[in-house]
Length: 422
Image (cartoon, rainbow, N blue to C red; front, side):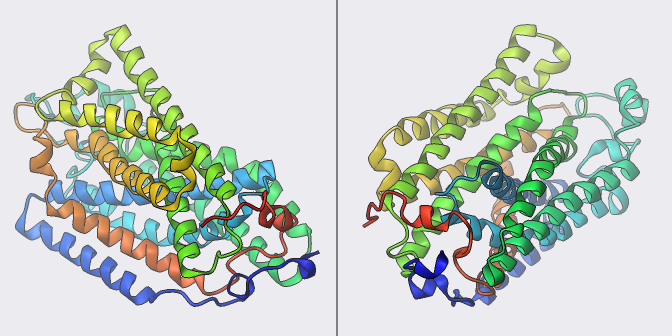
């Protein structure tokens, strides 16, 4: 079948040239080094939280890419074949994200106990009180879950699940390029059926461990789904940018069409609505119940300039992208699609900050102002982790074909209504 397909040489050839991965690695190492230097010249907890935000930002996006690959195999959709290989390349970043997370654990558990997660040090003073973590009855009740040993075990388990699933789907996809055997498609479909619930549980408990336990008094049954929706929005936005980048390079000329962009744009709109539904449900249920053990979380995020951060998420992360993506033209015209993809990625960063940074409180228990926390360390950390992720992607990029040319759905993908994306 594949021998009759008309695929441009750059897309069909193995080892397609990619931009210099060394530049991305240089940016990553420089950002990492500058952030590490921040521990010696700034507030160590603020610097550590900036690294947590950066690692969490990129990890949620890459894990969402893994889940999109698994969903592709479950639903067997044809249009997604065009972006699936690029997501597979991005999955190479997972093992590096695991290594980048380890300094957070080492610092907060051993070098400076309780620096990030207060519960890791029983002697830590709870913000706004004269009580320590060790004297807190709520911590006593949760200590069976919130302890360094179990936290470490879960961390290894989460990344172990994601890295193994990434290895399997990449191996099967790349091997199918060589021999065209349908057994690799069947294998990926079986692994996807098992991997989706495992990945879902892992991303749920990872968000609880890494972000929600910063304020371990608070609890929410929707929190994990919230971060799933957030990660999916980021993964789809990067998917749009990758498709347009490859089209501009010439690799996807004659391959990418408006219908591919429309399909991924529809998913961007879908997860915009889904994120809003989850965010509203969490807020409304806590507001309606009016239980102090729950409402304090949002009280903190309505204090000072954090109120305006919350409003920006409502209007700039939901309302604006929702209205924007209702337009067919905004989903299929490259410059309009590129704009909203970048917009979502920027607001996703604000969303992660909104969920994490109010944990850094003063002695009176009030969160530090948003703009005082948003120092250069957040940007060096984001560039450091992001540079290493992009380097991992580019290293994988040139090792195999740009498209899974022997995928059984490749013909349907390439002839996806044959509309030109000019």
